Image (cartoon, rainbow, N blue to C red; front, side, top):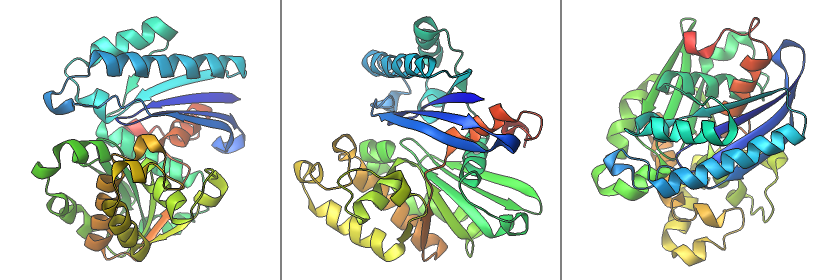
Length: 300
């Protein structure tokens, strides 16, 4: 079965086209990303008309592409910016009018759980070791942390994100927000996903052209993160736009995102993060491919 998933985040709108095999195995056909910055100026908890318009245009473009590539299912999910917006129904209607797609606005827990299972589609983690790992996704508006304990999946969604911290940085105590959750996952192997973390892996390797094969599985050490934070913070915005591996559209928020990663590693005492290209898109696709075999993340 060929499945397309569109993820509407605070900073970017992303698309995955994948072929699903037995047992929910997901094989990527193509991925695309547009920096739509839906969550800009979200201090008033309102999505702006311009942000909604450009994000709707990106969703419609991905929808048309998925159709042309033979997708049998096309799913669209939205996370933090839409979840928190007082006018989210206006945006839901815009997308439906443009595409006919019914957008699913994920709860904090659903977002975290789909991310966890999405990461597992990309790594061989024995069932006995599931309680030895944790997954972190640093997004534009929130940071999701997920781990398993006593057979149960635990999730925490923190109001920390690259866009949010950039816009409201002075009022956000990053370490204080992270510390209570970090105590719970200290000592575990950390897998990381989301645009900030994958971008840091690309910058660390100096990738002039983004290569998912070199990013997936990359070991992003705490030392590298600290060094990248210092390096990127020294540069002007225009200088950051020229850094190999860093998309120019992300240059204004990368310092804040890197700060979250650095604080997370310091709070947990972890030596680094294993970077994952597989994320919430893969988790949603896997459930759509095997609704009977895979327990829905919304019920976990």
